[in-house]
Image (cartoon, rainbow, N blue to C red):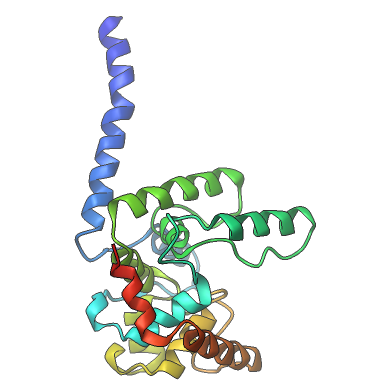
Length: 232
């Protein structure tokens, strides 16, 4: 009985230790896939109407600074300063939800990495709590640059295109390094709804969103803003 109880107590600790090791490893190597990509491919296996994932890892140094800035300007302008959760944005999102209004976001880039990499896509309270915990863990174990690098590589940017590598190859049909500031802002405009918006045929809403993101990029101070990611 003692051995059984000891094993019962040790098993969760061992599993948690293994998970921490996996998170650490993912912070060092090109991420091979994500939970969202695996779920996408499972749906594709059972449906002829869904194509399999397109994905290619691109190191951060090969991603234009304009694209790094565009996603921050669009998705999480407090990214350099928070610990994984933007408290004020989360409070505003919760309040909007309670009042029956559109939440308007609340998820940081770190939370989106946690969700896309490890979790699933519904809006349950359990998933949100896990997302918060994983976001704090990622901020503790990874640098801001690494979090942004993984985000730019695993975020869905088309119906089956995940990450900037696939978006450049199949949607823009040009090298990642050649993406302009205008194209970067357009990619960022797709992120809230990549299955509905199309980089190849931008709607009027996407164009207006692109212009807004470009203004935000300038308001943040341009590419100099990225220096804050490596500040102590």
